[in-house]
Length: 364
Image 1 (cartoon, rainbow, N blue to C red):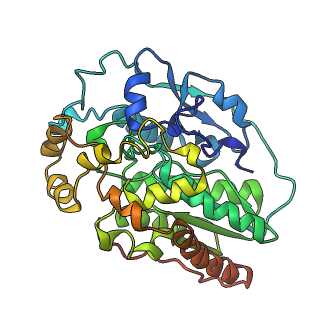
Image 2 (cartoon, one colour; image 1 turned 45 degrees about the vertical axis):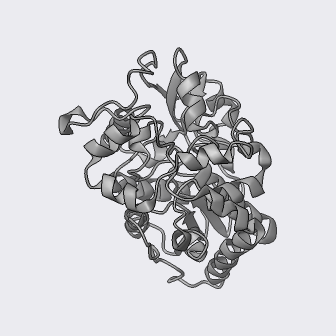
Image 3 (cartoon, helix red, strand yellow; image 1 turned 90 degrees about the vertical axis):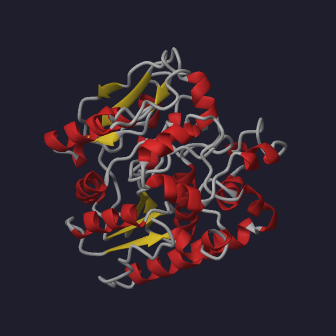
């Protein structure tokens, strides 16, 4: 059912923009045509992928009012490829290198009905920040890749469990100074999640909805839960999958695009890590990483964060890439899968109060 958009299978390949790394996009976007599709649920992936040189994840007619569409499109244009919020004094990051990058185009495909034949017991999808830089070696869609590695495993195990298209836009902060990232803002996330959930309920007629993410921001996750609560779904569950990995991630100072996420993406496929960087240039990757403390300090004044990013020293990683060397990717994946299995079992048992917690977070 994910035919609206495919989960990336290989880094820096094809027209799907989120399969590329931050560093690769800096090189390739100048002179390229980049589009944001607005399409219907069920639109064939091939139709979307053929629209331009680079295609952002779509937003869906059925999930949008005209007002919400206008606001979401404006916000994406404001952020991508580089943030342009001059009204609050922010600079256009790295503008001296990328003035030839074209403006983002909006392509609206006509609304079309793509009916689903069989109503699933559970329809599952992620709400992740798929348009978010993850340093020089990981694709933008790193979070969505991790979420669907769990959902796809469950789809192979559980009868009636079906994966739907992801919501690929969410709330973020740290990616904005480096570019190639989209912050949808929490209020827009909530409204879009409500519209998307109602749309897939009507489209697929599932008995239950299961939503996951791996993004670290608790503000993002609370916006998701608020959107689900405002929807027409009677039976649903939400899970922050990295809640089970705190001892490997935050307790080791490894929050974003470091060892944990590298190991989990590599477990999905080695083809998803840029071979020009990984693993031979791990020392160079390490030299550009930031600590959580530094990221939090800079987040308090985003003007300073943008100026810091423009020095060229940081590479977008907030964490510890060397953490990779002591991690067991299979163990971490099984931790995530175990909590997801429990949620699914409760939904299948008819529990209307299956997990609805945004999870605790050691960082914002």
